[in-house]
Image (cartoon, rainbow, N blue to C red):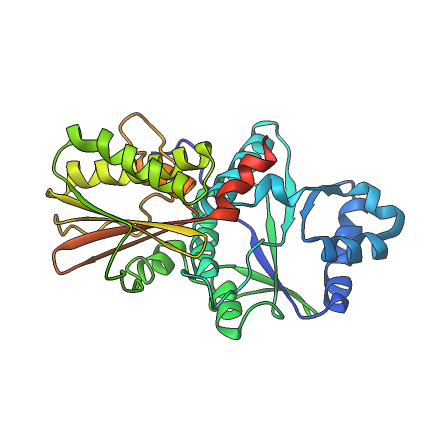
Length: 328
């Protein structure tokens, strides 16, 4: 169990449809923080930052401006990165209001719904960030997302910043309830022929499996370090399948444009908990496999049906290499 102190997480949504909305609703909030000398960190896209700086004028110097690349990338990294930041502020006795604009956009051509996966992380923020005492306001632009996404955003934030002021979201759904309805998502069909397709019957076969996956990732242009991460994420899931499922564990790998996809199936038939891999391990007895896999893959989906538990990992080239470029 985590040792973080429990508490109520102040998690608000700001739905914008124009630069004018940003100016009318967010600039007054920032001015109040500056006037009261309260800590505020703003991490938004360049267009939103330009609007805010222009409207704030000299008050912009009283705001801490974060760099999106330091927080956003793979979804699990973003989730863990914000947690690390909030935990550090809490340890220092600081309360910081974080105002963030998620770096995700609806893309109907992508092989997986990245926005839906991000919303699950946002829902888990309500539990995992609760002990740090730092409010978070998330900006979502209705020009970039369909109505269904925006309604989903409202359902995982307990409040919304509106023209009438800050109001409670009556459609708010707690994390456990939200995830339970989405953990067993329908996956797109597997291809008839995969780039790799093999069975692992025991832990002694993991080395050969890792070698094959690493070479496959490199063949598709992934840097050595990125190929290591693809291999490590898959290894964690395969190991879980061998230990908790029933071998053989089937491993298939294929690609969709510049996204590498790995699916691991075991025949234990035991459904994974809805929050599997979302909560950081808090002690030596806690499992780390799916937590690590969620950090290394951009999106991780699970499904249990017909006696088979499937875990699918997505590694988009640009997203997987983003942190490598940032930290190079």
